[in-house]
Image 1 (cartoon, rainbow, N blue to C red):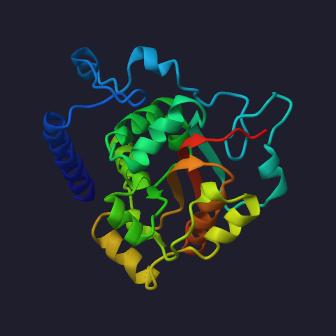
Image 2: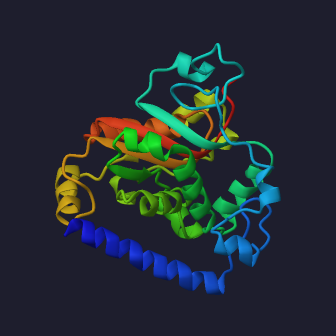
Length: 267
């Protein structure tokens, strides 16, 4: 019954997506120009020439956070060697450089919500086996402060999470964590300031036990979640995902993994 409800939810989303495509034709993730009919039919969300402007994360990368490394002799990035972590492992799709920087800006601030579909498809191609091996049971987007989300109209991490949920057939639970502080943009701060900025910025609902039971009864999450994946748009120092991961573990998650659209270099 629960799987049937989950499937019906995805079918409803797909019908809505098809309707929106008629009103808002899909655009290339890189250049933002309209996609050709042939690209749409082949379910391509980026022009072939534009794809060459992206820098996928490839080995060598940090065993822990997944950030690109300078050589194969190094196992962990500088940041991961210095700090203990609440995250089991992390992976990312692209290095945050070049054309993808403008793409992520449009995704966050210019209402390019459909970019989430492209990111989910890339995640499936790159990291589906990794996610299956980790036996992920729930997808949790990094939450936005409610007033900011209402002003913007959406949370880009939640869009990414829902698109990935549809591909993976794993529930996405945006309400499992809430942001209780209106923090400054992390890009304006240095490493130590970023940690302080997100300290105590997240929490699970006050009645987390009761809340979990409600979600389980509604068929939104499996009983006894042990492994979750936290999704976000950009990973820089990891301060934000670490703050959320700490709260997730306090709420009962045994393993917290991370998947981000982009990541900075670890050297």
